Amino acid sequence: MSGDMRFTLKVWRQKNAAEMGRFEIYEAKGVSPDMSLFEMLDAVNEDLILKGEDPIAFDHDCREGICGTCGSVINGQPHGPETGTTTCQVFMRLFKAGDTITIEPFRAKAFPVVKDLIVDRSAFDRIIAAGGYVSVGTGAAPEANTLPVPKEKSELAMDAAACIGCGACVAACPNAAAMLFVGAKISHLGLLPQGQPERDRRSIALRRAMDREGFGNCTNHAECEAACPKEIKMRNIARFNRDYLKASFLSEE
Amino acid sequence: MNELIRRILFSSIGKKILVGVTGVLLCGFLISHLAGNLFLLVGEEAFNHYAETLAHNPFILPAELALLAVFLAHIAVAAVVSIQNKAARPVAYEVQRSKGGSTVGSRTMVYSGVLLFVFLVVHIKTFKYGDVGPGLYHLVLTSFQNPFYTAFYVLAMAAAGLHLSHGAQSAFQTLGINHPRYTPLIKAAGWVFAAGISLGFASLPLWAYFRTGGLP
Ligand code: HEM
Ligand code: FES
Image (cartoon, rainbow over all chains, first blue to last red; front, top):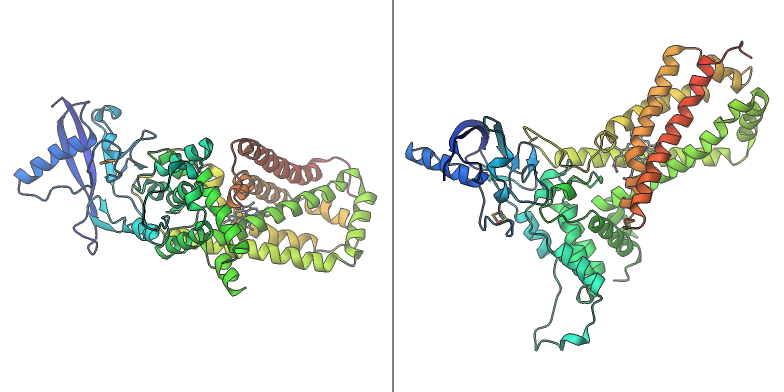
């Protein structure tokens, strides 16, 4: 695939977490409007490799907008200019030929840069490990109809469970807060009957783990909601606040 | 109890709840303060009578101390929250562009807050510790003969409007209230409240500055 668009790329290059990074300028030539941003970066990287230079490192896996591995800030916007989409689904037709495109990693103290555009999002894993789950005893599967789930609740829980853990909420938040990510877990588990026994404990434990990682405090800008590729709502943050408030004052545990 | 203090005072959500609750209390104060100030428009006698009744109320001292505590708590916790938020992103973005959500009000809470704080110090110095010999009405009207003082007052009230344009509705979200039925209403009411408070307070110095007729 090739075309006749050209772009100037301003890309963050950083060898590793310890070293200082800087922006480098690259020219991307022969770009087709049907190429994805990543396909363009692949082409730029092939040139770099042929020249014996270090290719630009970026995270990606499915390239279908479903896995949550990719994530960069493109011209100041996490996952690029479109809403409800991931970085791997950014296509070059969104840009004007000749544009300068600035590509930088998600920035947060809790997401240290590993290399170039790749950041370490294991902070999210540690939050989940602190209580973002439902404990179940092993044994035979229970009979499905013994646990009725109202349709509306299951829909809301599934909306929250659509989170792919990409971290764009943190990247978009002016405070680098992780409330949308954690709020999504609170809702996805807390709205279902299986999540009830640990609901109080979960809100306390997840809040503690989230703070320990060095994320910021939510001030309700709602930039997270706008950047979320799965369009997860601020309502989930309110539910987290509510659960936390209730558990703090009223939990009998 | 220790655990509760830890959960509220030393946690991200807890601190936000404190900012929210104190912010709502301050909103309540603003309503009653504005209502009182409007006696200015009724006339000298009514306003001075209101001011003296308030000053001689035996409960005014505890009420003022409580209000001071609420202000200090709001400012102190909001300052800690803001400093932590700055630290949460040590390397700034080269380019940052909103995808939607944030507003001018939400992005300037610290600046509008600091301006309000400076205003409060000046305001209390002028009207609480100023010379009330010929009556508070007289002090208010003479103070607002100064165009700079009047402009500063109006600017501070614009900051209050900006602060509340985000803060009023934000406090509901912080306290866990977000519902498809009520949130659009809360947001609209927040804007109306912010506009009402800032225009209401700003109208008085403007009235005092531009009114014709001599001083009392
Ligand atoms: C009459 C005075 C004030 C009122 C009515 C007021 C009200 C509010 C409200 C309702 C919030 C939102 C809380 C939330 O989102 O839960 C807020 C936030 C905030 N206030 Fe104030 N405030 C006042 C004065 C101040 C002052 C003097 C400062 C600082 C010097 C300040 C600094 C802040 C900051 C930094 C926030 C942002 C934190 C956040 O978004 O939660 N405020 N205020
Ligand atoms: S690479 Fe899987 S979502 Fe982008």
